[in-house]
Length: 175
Length: 132
Image (cartoon, rainbow over all chains, first blue to last red; front, side, top):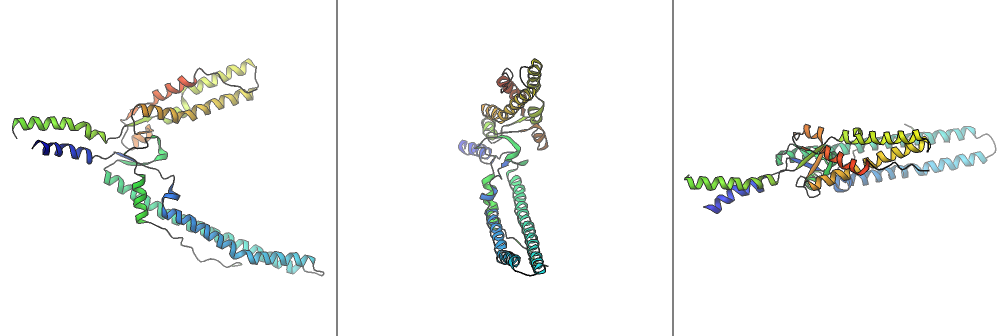
C-alpha cells in the first residue's frame, strides 16, 4: 500500500509539473525553420531569375547605344528610343522586385502566424502564463526546463515544412 | 482512512512539496531602465568628469569621451553581472520588472539593488581614463 501511495503522491508532483513561463529563441529561425530556410533560397533564386531575364536585352541595348554613338549621321532618335527601353526594363525589374518583396513578406507572415499559434498551444498545454522570446530575458539558464525552442521548431516544421512564394503576375517591361 | 494512514499521507504530502516546486522556475526581476539609465553610478561618472574638466588638465572632449566610455563599460558589464547574480541564486530566468508584472510574475525576487551594488563595487572608485 505504501509504495502505491508514495507513487500516487510523488509522480504527479514531478512528472506533471510544468514551468510557469516558457522561453523560445527565434534567433535562428532562418536555419531552424525549414519553411524559412526554403523561403530564403527561393527568394535568392527568384532574384537571380529576374536579373537573368533582363540582362541579355539590357546588354544588347547598351551595345546598340554605344554603336549608334559611333555611327555617322543623326542617330539621336534611335539612341533615345534605346535609352527609353532601358528605363522601361529597369522600371519593370524594380516592380518585379517589389512584388517579390511583398510575396516574401506574405510568406514570412504565414510562418509568423503559425509560430504565434504554436506558442499559444504550448502555453495552454504547459499550463503556463506566458511565452517569452529569449530577447525579452536578461538571463536565461541554458538548461532551463522553460526552454521550449526545440518543441516550437519541431511542431512548426511538422506543420509548415515549407512555404511558397506566391508571386502576382509579372509585368512585362514597358507596361 | 485510519489515523495511521492519514498521518502517513500527510507526511508524504509534505515530502512531495519540494518535488512539486522543483519544476517551478526561479525567476528574478530587475528594474532594467534604472540599471541602464538612472543608477547613481552614472551621476558619479559625470561628477568625476566635471571635476576633471574643471581641473583643465585635459581637453573637454577627451574627458567627455572617457566618461562616455566608462558608461559604455558599465552597460557592457550589466548582462554579465546579472548572469553572475542569477547563477549564484540558482535562478532560471531574469526579466525586467515591468514584464514580470505583465505576465503575473510581479512577486518574483527583485535583485536590482544587488546588481547595482555589484556594478558600483566594480566601477565607482575607478578613475576615468582620459586618453592623451
